[in-house]
Image 1 (tube, rainbow, N blue to C red):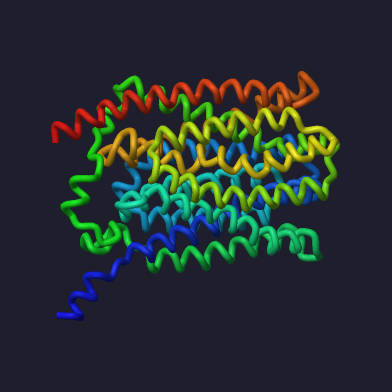
Image 2 (spheres, one colour):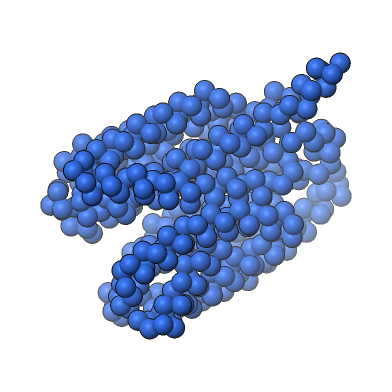
Length: 422
């Protein structure tokens, strides 16, 4: 009897959460966080301009956006395990293509493979897996898992930068990344399970009865897309991606333009990675404690504040302080384009349409990424500074704050009606 009781207490959920952490740590840490380190050596060796090389990112974001549109259908048909295996394979192949690239077309192919791979191994997949396996404290768990990006980026920097700067060169650095991806991908695929075998495997031991009474069943996707607040939410997600990704992509250049010391910038940006990891986790905790409205308002309000700080950065003691504050608290704004997307999907629309809505939100957010970079670069070309872009971004995020709160009000009223009927 004691052996049976012990077996019932055992849960596979911590293993799944650990595998998700390892997956984000590796895929975002080595494939996304290191991208900027390759720009100079690749463009110098291939003799191409940086603007031509930058279309690599466009290929990545377009591929991610397209794949995520079909995420719900794909995961329902193939299951998470097969998609994760395919994602790791795509990322490893991307690194291999980059290592052998002799022209921009091979670089663009690598970008497309990168976008596909990240679609099946990062935010969208983690959101779906955590939603499937965990019942209590979903926000906290999701925040902890997605915080792995910051830690992975820190480790990847220590491994990859010496290879690029040393005699090995960037091509061998890419091959090292490919080997790491194959190794970790194999490990994750072997131990991953698509879904709990029984209720004790998931939900941290919560009873089936509690799960049924506490979970938000939600509405079907076919009904969700007919509701005006669905498009309001999608618009807010799009604008958030456009603003935040566009601005974070030029922060280092902005600090250089205003005359900040290069070593100082390097140090505060390292601090940024750590703060980002901490705030991703705290965002999940805040959601579990205080709900969607409070969490979203805090993140949106912070995004407005840090953009104002960027406009105040100058080559002075005061300007250096503002830059440091930005580097820390930007980490509280950036969860709007990662951890908050799965939270939006579950909280606003529920279980029935979760995977489809999540895939679409990530797709729309990524489309914002693709548009944000050229728009803020255009602001610089026109005004000779990024400050105009920061100002417009701050104004847009004020509207996003108002808009998402209106969406939350409508969605929560609908949720109350559905829960009363059930």
